[in-house]
Image 1 (spheres, one colour):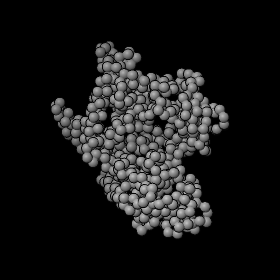
Image 2 (image 1 turned 90 degrees about the horizontal axis):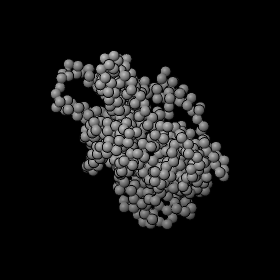
Image 3 (image 1 turned 90 degrees about the vertical axis):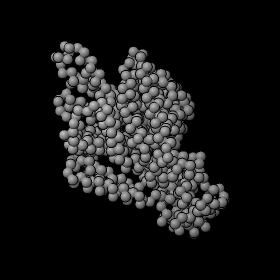
Image 4 (image 1 turned 30 degrees about the horizontal axis):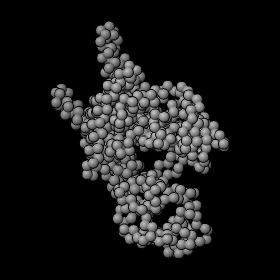
Length: 592
């Protein structure tokens, strides 16, 4: 029944979407209303709606335009009407056959083209947009004014979900240390905010004997905490993990009001169903799966732990309570890391080796220091007394960043993982959910399935050759674990994706030889083209049409970045030329 409901809601959502995309690259002058502002490391990006084009007519509902190398302070506000000149293009195709498809992602946002501005924008009309978006932008501006540096950008990410201002190197350290979940507004953040507000409101109401004696202040505190986390959700832009956490936290708070206990797997299922009914496209987002499998694993384990330790003593001293807290933090980190490892390995191509150690330090600091002070800075912002709390929160963030830098610099801090088949990911996740959901010994079958799928993943075969969807760049995995690429100046994103799929370090990316042989000797190049040999297979990469006749006779595959005339090569299925690539998208070839 739930599957049928999900299919129905998905098709219902599609029925209300205008599926219109730009057909080819174009230079345009346009006017539009700012609907969304995202800050990047080298500028900012806006989504424009209510479009009007000066020279041509395009049936586009929204476009996304990047303003590169522009100061963040110059970004327009939500609701402003601006005019600019931009180069637009259709959403790019995936750079590998199983890669991320931007077109499918922005389809549900009704964005028909992406591009970048080639001029300063002109403010046509300044409007008062949706108040929460304007408040969000003002809060970002206030934090940047009060706290300069990377600590302020991390604080912005914690309060508003805006991570574009964080330096890419710092983000890389955070991911390598296994602390990326701290920047994703989810259950940890909403739970901390709900607990903080519940405590503050209850203490405040208990100061009045009349209120404390005549009203159930615990239930009123739960209600005001629910209002507070709703405001926090809107301020953060309502990302998928935060939406799931908001629904679950709401159930918990209303359970306090109704004198019931709500933390269970049923709440997780209700949260998933609610999100899928409202936004069924979330099912295709990695964050949706990471969020739900993490919380499912934790609730399942602690339900089992609670039943197994019913007779344990609840009277613990301060030292014992502290030991128990840090032990629970380490155990929670270990369980969540293991549960999300299949997704992390498949989609991101790495695993953080020391994530438990880094979380043991960072999570308590985030929970007990950074988040309470961050939220106090918001509460006291109207009173112009936020700088004190911002500086204290930034101090705690600085410690977390130092931990991430230290952990990421340790030997083998990141373990590269070869990309395995998607079907193995399905079996891994199926086994994990089976293990988490069932209560009897039959649940162990899920562990067997997961372990078997993990074992098979070590025998996965990765491609030997990649070609980007625009037929501009080619990469080859050589036997000495290097990635030979046809160009180092363009296609950097595609090359980075391919090297992660092949578990190759960034320093092992090598440019093709112009003339001569590669270091392994498997690739030979001259002015006419290149030939690569591996596993008894020969792959030719002609640079001119004159080399085609010879290449078609001796090569198992002919890969050309230009159009091969028909009739030149008789074995058509072994010829991959520009026409074929533009029609079928990115190519990945396994030489057997």
